[in-house]
Length: 376
Image 1 (cartoon, rainbow, N blue to C red):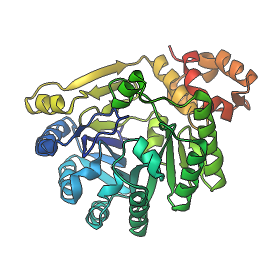
Image 2: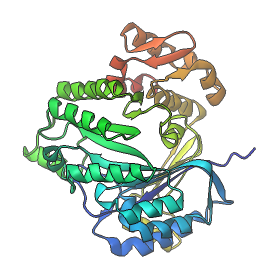
Image 3: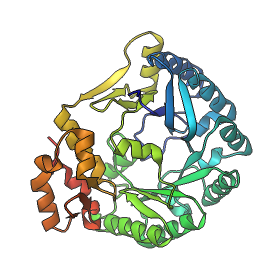
Image 4: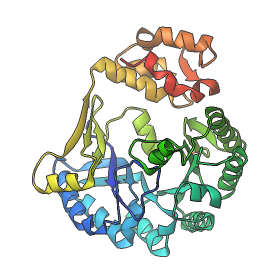
């Protein structure tokens, strides 16, 4: 049986506009780089010794849909040299609502795309303006309708804790998203990242982050609102109608190996995470010059990898099964985290039935603060 990865992430670093909160690896207004990016991608693919048969492929960004129908076809043709998409595979493309045209949808269907992750962020005009987005609520609605009518699965990204956003506005967003008929919703709290326009505005006092108590109330509203609408809350930020979980993300949370290509893309072999250089221009130049274009290399010991598996596993509502954890990691969960689990259970942050450990809602709300208890 082959140990080759069956999951691939491809980073497409192009956008028409960089939102004020965004610190992702991307370039805006640099479509002149697309040809050189594709040439560099072809070279990077050469490191794959034999074609990979894939169960999931995820095209993230940036905005992959910004390539347009013809650019998307060029990208898929290029990847077909080394990547084979298995029957029944999940193939996701991230998209901006403004890019969802009849031509884009036709290309997706022709290329075997099964799922589109739409960067809607909100269905409220004031919130979209506060988030520096370049589309309107009706653009989101139109894009979702076009995609669903074409038989594509849709994930809708929503953001909470936007500048000036109220709890009532979040509740309306959640209800509107559920009413659209999408199969999956991802809900993210705005983070204020170093080097972004939002963070600079915060330091000047021009933007004010939401209070922590409001952030928490918004997250709880997401859980309650989407659960009531028929979604299962299966991971901290992710909600799916039954049978429509994101299989690609589940590979990450299972700590399965995956390959990754493009600037800023991180691949994982089960022990070592290797990240490409984050600068799009530097990555392109280095790859085309035959130079190493890596950024960070995070090599873990077997125990460190097992401890990370605890963290990513507990982000899911299914939690961690002791036997499955031992079989996958070679370590006993209690030998690594028994004190932490006991403390979390005593604080009502987790439940433990003897075979499976799960975080409670209270635990999920503070989960980022718990991981220091188990990581080395």
